[in-house]
Length: 185
Image (cartoon, rainbow, N blue to C red; front, side, top):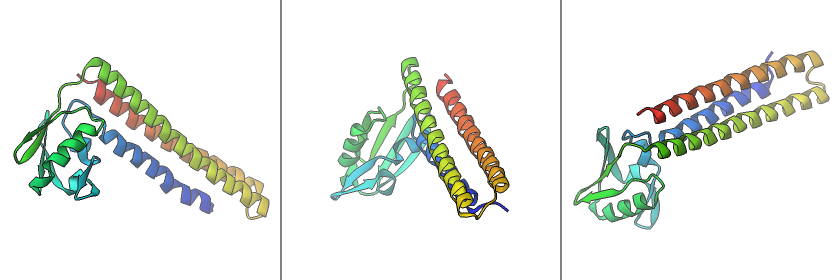
């Protein structure tokens, strides 16, 4: 029988990986991607609204992002939001659309982005390990309360460690793929 702590912790570990992947999608790799700008918030009639809720975002080619607002009056707000963001792209406003040219990355910028990826990867690993500790504490409490025998606790802790290792390996694999994508010229 698998203890409830293990059953509850696996989705939490999976969510840590998914959050890391969402963050990775926002990292520029030299190719245009709508994920680069989707998280930018725009001041839309006094409310901070995600860009993808006030405009259509497309990538007609590998080095261009086109943002077409549904309301023309928000063009300047979109331009300001992109300029303030940390994506490092300069918006070109063309009457009805905003164009973002995605230049090829320099070697220094690639190295900086790899550092950013590694930092985010470590954060995800720490998050998974924190979930492991949380589940291990629950197992130890169950042992103290008499709900688990020592043998069952050891089996559950081994299963927990294998689960943790599997998720850390998945994090590392995704990070390696993203690093290779960034360093690809």
